Image 1: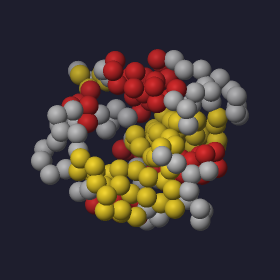
Image 2: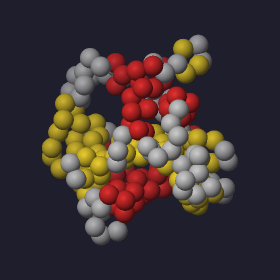
Image 3: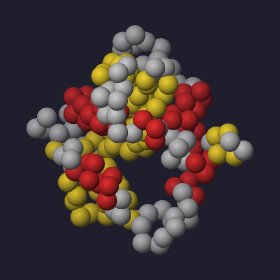
Length: 195
C-alpha cells in the first residue's frame, strides 16, 4: 500500500519502546480521494483535545470544522499525517508550506499513548515532508507560550523560541474557552538543513 493507493502514502515505522507493533503513518493530501469520512476520521483523532465537542459521550464535530479539515487536506502543499497502531488512528498533524517554510500544526496524540515515541515519529515525518518534498529549510509552529512542558518537548527536538508572538483568538470557541486572559502564541522554529 504505497503511494497512489486509495488511502494515501503509507510508511511503517517502529513507534518506540512502549509500542512493539509497527506504527503506520498515512499522508492525506489533495492527491488522495477526499471524502467527508476522511475529515471525520481526522476529527476523531483530535477528539481528546477538543473534548468540548463531546455530547452525551459522543463526539459531535461541527460541520464548519469538518469543512476546514477537508479544505486543509485539499489545499496544495498541505498534508495531514495520521499515525495508526494496530489499526487504530492515535495521532495526527498537519504540515504545510507557508511563506517558504514548513508549518506544523493540528498536532494531537491520544493521551493514553503519549510517551511511547508516537509524537516524535509524527513530528519527524512532518519535518521530512517539509524538507524533502517542498525543500523547506525551516519548520515553524505556534505554541501557547505558557505551555512550558510542551515547549521543552519541542526544544529537545531542535526547535528554538523566536520571541515572535501572535495573539490568542479569544472569543473563538473553536479554540477552546480559556481560563485565563494572558494567553498568546509564540513562534518556534527549527532549521531543517542539518538533519
